[in-house]
Image 1 (cartoon, rainbow, N blue to C red):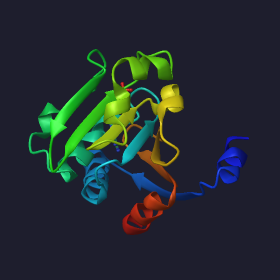
Image 2 (tube, protein in one colour; image 1 turned 90 degrees about the vertical axis):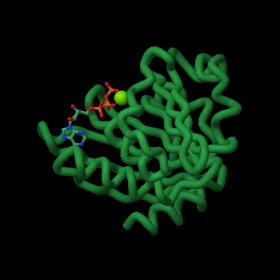
Image 3 (tube, helix red, strand yellow; image 1 turned 180 degrees about the vertical axis):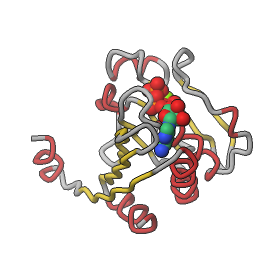
Amino acid sequence: MLLLLKIFAGVKEKKLTFKSTNVEETMRFGEKLGMLLSPGDVVALVGELGAGKTTLVKGIVQGLGVTDRRAVKSPTFSLVHTYKGRMPVYHFDAYRLEDAQDMLDIGSDEMISGDGVAVVEWADKVSGCLPKEYLQITLTAVSQSERNIEICGYGRRYDTIINDLS
Ligand SMILES: Nc1ncnc2c1ncn2[C@@H]1O[C@H](COP(=O)(O)OP(=O)(O)OP(=O)(O)O)[C@@H](O)[C@H]1O
Ligand SMILES: [Mg+2]
């Protein structure tokens, strides 16, 4: 149904899958992605507890020119962290949020599709406040150290990124 709605709305999706065998590989993948991102881009991360979302964000922010990777931690309690890289990076964690309204209440509107890049952990919980076009990354644990990373781009802007990643 969702797929039908997206097609109806004119937003096509493009997919890519990648297998990571260790933490460093996930971070390197994130770094490569971070280097391709521009102001206004939105990355929606989906995956269970411990799937590797924050690990991926560490790589992404490094690729965006944030030098202190250790500063990147799940903003579970503060809900959003802002890092200074080539552009602002807004790192959300929606784990404790109920719905999109909670995201709006913390001021997400200004930060999503604004002057920087927005990266949202547990994005499926707040899908109502994502723009029509965004990059969705779903992480799945296959074993203790293996992760499936599925990248799905909604919108032409993200086709370019997926082409550059593949
Ligand atoms: N290939 C891998 N890629 C990423 N993390 C891995 C990998 N293999 C093992 N791990 C481990 O999985 C865990 C991932 O934790 P991380 O905080 O990134 O997950 P998360 O999805 O953000 O979880 P949460 O929902 O609790 O915020 C870490 O302990 C990390 O060491
Ligand atoms: Mg996390």
